[in-house]
Image (tube, rainbow, N blue to C red):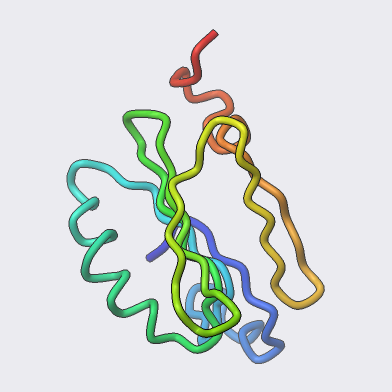
Length: 111
């Protein structure tokens, strides 16, 4: 189960834990889950027509990568740099994240 997801589908309101049409999925990578999240889940998730963003966040160092579905249906997979901002738009919902937001209160950010 992902650590966070965002859906804009009204039908996804019916079940609190299972979503049919997620637009954004975030996974926190740990040594025990990284291989599954990076390979197996990604292969499965990229087949979801509703998915536009798949964010991977490392739990042990400041590192994040976001697979983003481009307008031509292909996937871009930029690694977020210190000054990058990830703007997520899913229907009427939107959010904007940077590495400082993702790692706030973790003790991993340089002082």
